[in-house]
Image 1 (cartoon, helix red, strand yellow):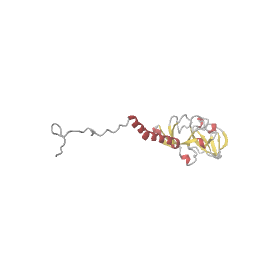
Image 2 (image 1 turned 90 degrees about the vertical axis):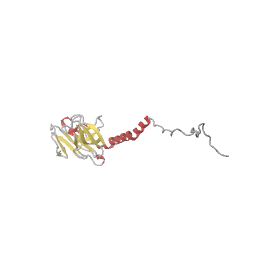
Image 3 (image 1 turned 120 degrees about the vertical axis):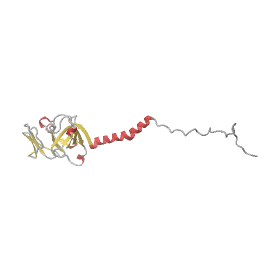
Image 4 (image 1 turned 45 degrees about the vertical axis):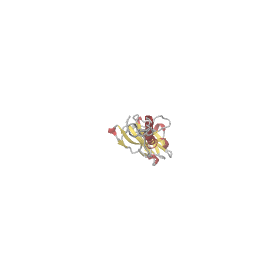
Amino acid sequence: MCNFEPTGSNGEQPDDRSDIPDKAPAAPQKPFLSAVFQEIIQVVLPALLLAVTVHLFLAQATVVFGQSMEPNLSAYQRLIIDKISYHFRSPHRNDIVVLKVPTMDELLVKRIVALPGETVRIENGIVYINNEPLPELFDHDQSPQNMETQTLGPLQYFVLGDNRGNSNDSRVFGPIDREYIVGRVWVRYWPLNQFKYF
């Protein structure tokens, strides 16, 4: 008795491959929208969170409006505000700061001239701090202006515009509380030919 394998009509072995797939199944394709969504999650969202964190806690861009800080800052110049320094130190005299005065909608840019606990008065356009004339860093309008002596509270600052003849500042709205100082002007970055660190 002999065993034999069935053969085809031409003597060849039958080619029965019905149970073998022609090729491996293709990997499922990711839908285009899914890929875009993953890209947003991986790239755009972290960048957005970083930008929000920087804006809220570290730095902020702003634009100068008006002429109250001339000749040192002019209208439509663009600034970067340092919002973190004052978490580690107190504001200093002559710092240029950005304020959010509660009674006003827009941010203001002013210069600190008097610090907490000091007295300030203006006589014939000259600013006196603790009865001593304020050393001025630059020439400005010395038009006759007077203001009676004010004593600042423990967390209050007196701010003036550099263009004192055309500035809405502490002579109008009074000393500013520390909590309303948004930050210190750090860089003027526009126009590029007027780039400056403060």
